[in-house]
Every structure is written in structure tokens, then in C-alpha cells.
Image (cartoon, rainbow over all chains, first blue to last red; front, top):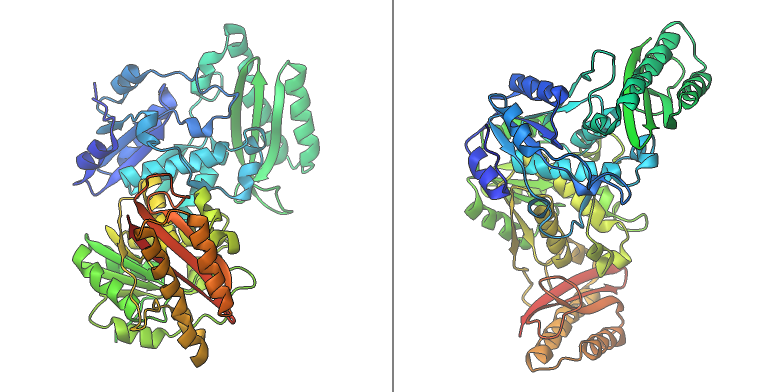
Length: 276
Length: 276
């Protein structure tokens, strides 16, 4: 089992001589999706670092910070032979003083998931920048399942001149199409069977786009109605430009369809890219 | 004359093989104060980089961004033999897209100068982080004449885990005590003679503290009245804790007295540290 490093000074010491670090920040409770990110990291650096940190700053007061699954031993076992270094800091190690300095994300962080999780992306950008500054990687790998997050982090890297290449990895899915997510563990057996509807809905919307349908509002409303009819509570289904994450301009060909919806007490997100 | 580098990619290429960079960010129009920062930088790195960039993000709409003195050739001549690399980007090079991602400074950034220059310190933290990410220094040197700025940047480095040591250099003064500043060039001959009153006022306040006076409000009001009586318009005179930059708690012994005041159309700032 890879022995995790818990403190920042020890991490810096361990990495001092490394010059080509590829980094995968995670919140732990690792599944095949994470494992595939760590495998890909190997192509982008000689030293692969994974972090495991459930970041309080990105959870709202009524969200699942407390119940978010923490499985450090199992995670380290999964990373054996894949990651050279596992960094698993405590909250006190990452925030030794109350955090007062934040990375203010761009306006698009207030849309989509940001409209339902105020402050979420500010918490993400801030902790990722802190982790970047500790690890100092040349590349970092993120899952495109968190599409808006990856978009915002790429903007952060670009607009703050970070010397880091950000790589987006394709979403890993269960055989029935459900995007792998630590939050899938919250689902009951019945909910798990139903959960696949989210990806089916997005895939069907993509097909309609590729068939030439351009009334995005109608497509979004229809997708929403389908989910709601099956008992979901829908935060959003939205067709966006993959380049700006804003409403697509006429003629844009690189689109992404994103959704977030609740199945019982579990909030699931997913997305599909569509090139027209 | 040191030939300046204007673009970020060329800067990265030039610095790629350097492993011990000491950095001095400036807005140019260099005087002996800047020169002393650059000399000190040599003690903190093998490669000394100075940047010259008048950063629009830290100027308010009615401030002196347009008239701020730009003297690149003279600046490069002064840096000859002192800086190994001079980085002088254009605004378009630093902000190729409208900046939407900012470093949100701590609450103390809304006090003192921040109360009179809304957004100023957000502009400073953002550009300094961008410059840090371009230069990737191990150390950076700032003048303590901009005491609040240095305090906020130290907090930024600490709270964002920057792998950079920030060094504060003592304020350089003219023979009559006036703190060196590019904005001194705005002063008429008469104003220049009067300007020294700011430092005299702060020094006298420090003496009163060291003599045991503890009624900070009275000291501040008296200093303000003295300046106003001589025709200054005072933004603030404030006794603060050097450790928190907040109002000193009873028994605190490391204090700093800061002031900002206008002489005609020129805003001057200064400060003195007082250890009781």
C-alpha cells in the first residue's frame, strides 16, 4: 500500500527533486474513473502525485461534506503501483488559518451547478490553486464528468498564467451508462437502476442535435420533463457552447449538454459533448 | 542597457533553465528605492528578474493610470548590471482576454488605502500572482513603503501556499525624509518642500508611542489636524498592529503607523514601524 503523506512540508521535501510531476487531485473514495485519471497522468510526467482531500470550502452548509465517503486505506491500496506519492492532508493542514484569500472564479461559475451551489466553484478554484502550489506539477488531470469544474479550472490556469497543462479525461461509465461517481454510493438499489436515465436522456438529446434539431429550449424542456416524469428533481438540463460554456451562438458546432438532477437525496451530474 | 523581454513565452523560455530566481515586480519609473530592491534581490537568487508593468487592474477609473510615468529606456539603463532579466509586458500581453479570474484579497484589503481605492488590492494580488506564475521565483522583494500591499501579498503567499519567500525592504528616503516614490514626480517645487511633513508627522507620532502614549485615536486626530492645517487632504492616519494590520489589541508591541494624504493633486503614502 502506498503510504500517504499528510503534511505539506513533508510533501514539499519529497517532491523537491522531482522535475516532471503529473498531478491528480481527488476527494478520495476512488473508483475506476479516478484510477483511469491516475493511469493517464503517467503519460504526462515522470512522478505521479494523487491527492485525497475532501475540501470543506467547496461544500455548502446543507451539502454532504460530513457524509461524503472517506476511505483512505482502500484508496491508497488502489493507488499502489499507480501513484508515486499520495498526499492526504487534514483540513487543518490545508487551512491552518481561516481561509480569507480566494480565487474568484469567472462569471460562468454562477451558472449551471454554480446557480445551485453558491460558492462551490470558488472553493474548488481556491483549493486546486493551493494544491498546485504545493505539488508544482507540470500537468494535472481532471475528469470531464465535472465538465464545468474542468472548464473553470482551465480558465484559471489560462488567466492566472499557471505553468501547468490541464488535461481533461473522458468520463468513465458503468456498463449501463451511468457516469462513475463517489456519490453513486448513496443510491439505493432501486435508485441505482433508475439512475441510468440521466445519461440516456442526455444521449438522446445529443442525437436530436446531431439530427439537426436546433430549438435548444424545447430539447432542454423535453429532457427535463422526461426526468421529472420518472421522479427526478431537476436542477438543470442545458445545451451550451463547449468553448465558452455560455448559450451557444448561432453556428457554433462544438456543444456540450449538461445536467444535474436529484434522485431521492442524491444529486447526480453528467454531460455529453456533441460536435455538429 | 538591459534589453527588456516583452512577451510571456519569451520570458518562460529565457527562464526555463534558471532554478534560483529572485524577482522584483515594479511599475517602472525607477528610483533609488527600486534600485535598492533589485540589489537586495541578488542576495536571494542567482538570477534576478525585474518586471516593469503599469497594471491597469489596480487603478481606479479616476486614478492616475494614464498619467503614471512610463520611462522604459531609462529604467532599463538603471537596471544594467543589476537585473539579469527585465520583463516589460504590454497590457495586452498580461491581459490577452478580459481578466475574469481574480485573487480575492483578505478583508483588511478594504481598510486603509483599500477604503479609498476600491478594488486596488484585488488588482495587485491578481497581477502579482500572474507575474509569479510567469517568473516562478523562489523569492520576491517588495518595498515596505507600500506596507499594506506587502502585508496582503505575504498573506496571499501564505494562504495560497506559494513556494516563494517574500522579502520586505526598508523604505528609501530623500535626505529630508520624504519616502521615495514615482508619484513624487507629480509634486511642484513648493509641494515637494511641504511633502516632508508626512514623514515628520509619522515620526513624531512614533515618538509619542515610544514615550508611552496609548490613546491611539488622540494621536491619529492630532496628526491629521497637523497635516490638514498645512493644507493636506488626509485619507487616513492610523495606528495598527504590525502583525495583523488591524487595530492593536491591548499589550501589542509591534505597531505600524500608516498614512495617506493628498498634497494638491498628488496622493502620498508613508508609514513607520514602532516597537514598544
